[in-house]
Amino acid sequence: MVTSRYFFCHSLVIFPRFRHLTLMQQGLFLICLLLLSGITNTVSAEVYTYTDSYGQKHYVTSLEQVPQRYRSRIKSPAQLPLISSHPDPNYNPRKVTRVQKPVVLVMQGCPYCTAVERLFEKNDISYTRYDIKTDRKGRMLHTQWGGGGVPITKIGSTIVRGYDPTSILQALGK
Image (spheres, rainbow, N blue to C red):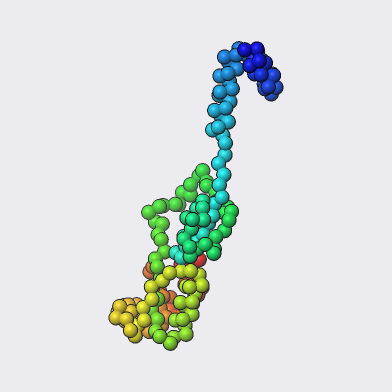
């Protein structure tokens, strides 16, 4: 009993009045102190970030959670976005729209069509391709979208005629 009292009295020099407490009070105090120290421990983990083909940013805690095709673009450790305690008053979750998968109308042998497709592949953007000469749906969409030359790229409600990488990437939010 004397040794435990001696331990409690002299081990916590930070609290000068600690030695005047009874053994029961010292024990309760230490239990509270241990519980509080357990609550305030910080958790840390490595966070990886990657951007998918729709331009959506993802944060994960292990490499296994990253799809194989995006692993070459992983940034580690990632800076997590700041979380504001005061949300943006203009934010409306119902108005948040996901960028639709681009649809490209092409024709075999068209160098500008090939350039649009290379742009999507270079930026790892999945897209739907229709050849207006060989695909019935492609001819129908070509007529619906006003015809003319190719390539024609539709992203959501935006139609981009010809090879215009700036407009295409802007419509994708990049």
